[in-house]
Image (cartoon, rainbow, N blue to C red):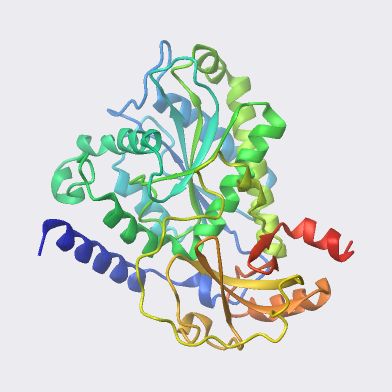
Amino acid sequence: MTKNQKARIFLSALAFFMILLTPQKHIYAQETTNLVKKIVLDAGHGGRDPGALGKRTKEKNLTLAITLKLGKYIEEKMPGVEVVYTRTTDKFLELSERTDIALKENADVFISIHINSCKDKNVKGVCTYVTGLARSQENLELAMLENSVIKNEENYEAKYGDILNQTIDYESEYIASTLFQNAHHEQSICLAGYIQNQFRTRTGRKDLGVKQANFAVLWRATMPSVLVECGFISNPDEEKEMATDYWQSIIASAIFRAFRQYKEDLESGTLSSSQSQRAPKGEVSQKQPAPQPQPAAPQQPKNNNSGNNSKICLKVQLKSSTERIPTNSKIFKGIENVEEIKIDGVYKYTVGCEQDMQKILQIQSEVRKKIPDAFVIAVKGNQRLDINAAKKELGIK
């Protein structure tokens, strides 16, 4: 057995046991009207780890200032949401500590704030990352740069193994991370898309899209999680802006509005990933790396309404995954006629097929007694539609 094969087996086993040990409140919680009660905000870097360096600023100071402003907005304008910070001072934290805080707090959302850097000083803009396999050399290099803080930790080689090695088998790392993240990957993409949309439409900053990379701070998270790169400290204009209280507030406000929209849409069942479709070519738009070969899944129950590929169906999505989930899994216990559909390489598990919004919302209300973060999607054949576009086509106001 090769070293990489052993690594895959170990990481997969570790992920499996972590899932078993993690409280599954998202599956069995009874309250369905307030799905997002707690958010963990992570100011990247800190203490002896300055992060990226500009001519006049340090990443650690900019991320802390933006994070504290973001938290204040949430606390003032969303009193039903508890805000937890990984740090509120210039303090060094290990990457694993940041995720551990989110796990210990049983958070519903995790947002990590960072500032980008590039050798080309002309590069500018904002991007938001979800966990996944880096699809470009640029994303790979950024992930390795952000992960390099691990070297500041004691016994980092024992803790993280080969994660900093440029020859790491990133595919095996990705397999492990997706086992943690599959249940909430789509929600992460939606939140990331909302954030980019706010930056694009409200702040005028260049939208570099929703991307994916194997950030160590995200891969163990078991809740919707994103890492926001708020601008380039290497770009003189953006560094100058981000050093001001005004622009820090603008950036924090954009992320706040996106988070508020995400919470409202998740709880109303209208969460949409259409914003992430604007991602640059080759980046995330509901697509994931090809799944590993899996045993044939049990024959799925047929939905009598799904045979007409030209018909728009409003469905209640229960879960999504890059790997098949048996429809008789305990995750779906008590829910009948679970249907598996595959869109852009991702398996989606749904119930219902309606063209009446009230009827599908009734189904969603019942389903949320078992899976509180279930939400309504629109499907036409094997294509996912924007829910608002589908409602317009169906004549629903």
